[in-house]
Image 1: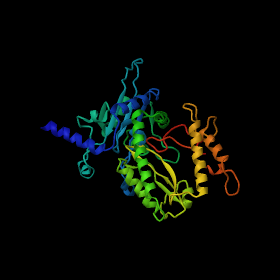
Image 2: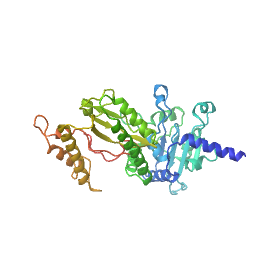
Image 3: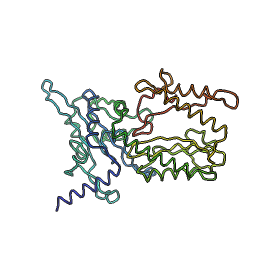
Image 4: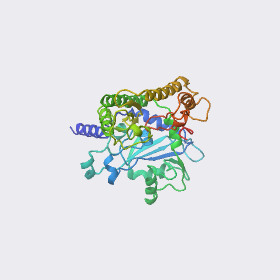
Length: 390
């Protein structure tokens, strides 16, 4: 009977932590091993963000993209340590590949508010998480001292200039706790992870497809509801309801519903106007499914029928998109403006050679944004953007 209660507790804990779809543990393990091969024998130390406090707490916790990519773990306050295997050298014995997930100790008072959490002492912790070892966070200092050599190079999530990273406060905490790594040289792990995240595995593609299908259904529902006199915010709320009931946990980005002049503002965010007859309405909105993003933008007439001029401009933009799609060559095409085989240039040339503005000037100067971007765990996922947005 006791074993049955343990299994039930683990099951309930997993349900509370992973209400989203999650790939098999082997996928996350393969990513950790692939990263360890890129570090030239150096360790990786990565921190999950802490739970937000104050006004930001009302928006709920979302795991850091890179931490989730390597672990599949969605709870705050965890730490991931990866130490690559090394061969024996001189008097130093060989060291096997080592990976440890550190979790905070159980807080029974806090769990009255948050629900039960998986902890390192649970005998199922390694099986559930897919890590070789799961340890309590208090052991981080001891494991660092045991596993890392003198004057090590450590890859972590270094903050970019003028910005914080999930590891910023945690590295400071290590120093205050006298657990910092003596004479360590820190390298930024983000470029290595970006190169891995650029190529999606089959499971990731399927999650992006589910985000896209839910977002498509939401866009179609918004089109059916569109009419003069309705507010932008009502359309935005409908979108979020429709993809939410199809399993998306949140928007991929702040939804944009812009009518009339607002439809020309790239990052319009107020969604506060009333849609008028004769307006065109831009809907730039998509949901996030199990941490994976989609991104869909569509333009439609508020009253169901374009004017002749609206249709002309719409068809030019559509033609530019179709020209870029037709020009695409796998392994050759580039997004950047300044390179040969540039899909951006194909689209720009089409727009600039089709139609004029009200002053008789070519339309290319109004193409002020990029042609496209990668999607994945982030709506603008890592990839070779070059000067796509310059």
